[in-house]
Structures are given as C-alpha cells and as structure tokens.
Length: 268
Image 1 (cartoon, rainbow, N blue to C red):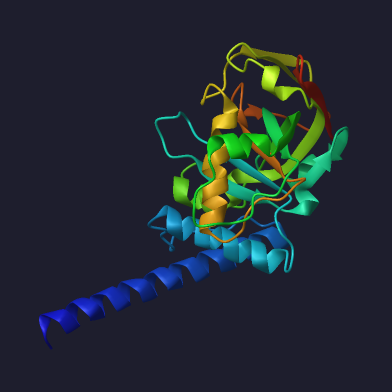
Image 2 (cartoon, rainbow, N blue to C red; image 1 turned 120 degrees about the vertical axis):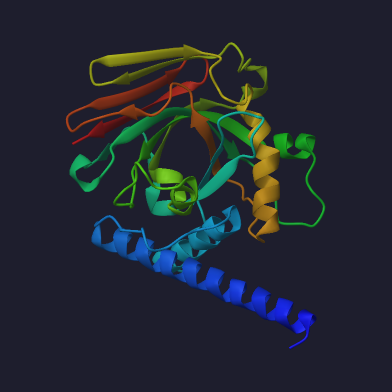
C-alpha cells in the first residue's frame, strides 16, 4: 500500500469512528429524553464541537421530526471565547407565567436572561450578515428564565462537548414581557433582580459579553453554516446574569429586568 493510500485509509477510518460516536451519542440522548432516564455516556467520546453539533441535529430531528427551532440559546463565559449554541424546540418554549413539574427534572437549575425576538427572517446565505443587518431584524427584547436540566447520568463530570450535545443543558425557556424600544437600553448598566423562592440575587451590567446583542451576528452565522437560518418570531436567549441558580419544588421564580420586563415560572 502506498503512503497516499495508507493516509486515505486512516482518514476513512477516523471518519467512520467519528460517525459511529455521533450516532451512538444521539441514540443515548434520544432514549434519555424519551424515558427520562439519564444516559450513561462513559463509553462514547465526542472529540470536537462539530461532533456535538452533529449530535444536537440528529437528536432534534428524531425527537421533533419536521419541526424547526422556536428559539435558540447562545452564549459563552466571555467575549474572548467562541460562543456556543443550542436549538430550543417549540414544546420547550413557554410563556410567563409558566408552571413546570420539578420531579421531571434531574438538575433543577434556573437562570435570569435577556432574549431577543426577531421581527424579520435571516435566511441562510454564504455571505455573513453585518451586525447592523442583524440588529435591524430584532423586534423586541424580553426578560426570560431558562430552566436547566441534564440528560446525562454523570453530568457533573461530563465533558463540555457532551453538555453541548445535550442542548447545553436546556430544559425549557420561559418568555416574559419585554420592550420594542430596546436600542435605548444600556446593557452595561442594566440591573436584574432574580427571586428564587425567598432568596434574591441581584446584579448590574453582569452579562459576560457586556452587550448580549453581540451574540446575535455570531448565531446568524452559526445557523447559516448549517443551512438553518433564523426566522421572524424566533427567540434568542443570551446567557445568565447571576449564574446558574438552584431551585426546588414549591419555588416561584421571578426574573425582573427594570426597563425591560419580567418572567415568572412556578416549580410544582
């Protein structure tokens, strides 16, 4: 065998191994979603973000055939790091005041977030959208609460790639009130009050990207690369302002962003 053929054989073997890992990971997560039994993932290794996004796509298509995402979550620890994204299916997009059953969740986490609802389509295209064009597509800014959960059995020790494959720990997104006059908001001074039961967390100008709208052009490019696009009515949430907070059954959770709006969810 020539060196060229040997190299090609190695490449083919690696592709086959990657495809096998993606298929197996998707199978585990589909079963975990359907049975509400967390998946043991120790024998499957995801090696790249491309792997994780491929798993996302396969799980979404299997669980919600023919549907498209009603919302997206995008974010990251800082603007020095490549953001990540995950689709939110229509059944997981809830309207405030919402109610969810805590017993159905393995990890009952909540986050106070700011989201953007689009008023115009941003269909996929080869040329990236300018930030100005993306911002012009925004119709309003909303207060939202993300409910966080996991379908992973050993989620505390699971890799970041597995968490990304598992829709970045999304369980549901609760959309609250908002404002169409969003361009006047100074996100660097924006305050939030987040009440979880009797506990209150407060923050000011605490978003990891400073202005969360900076995530939108990146997400438009991310979706376009996958032939998905964004649609009028889509909600794009942008990450926690006070970090991931723990909740429990019986808690009423309220995220209040003065000048923007509030969202409420009750954990039963």
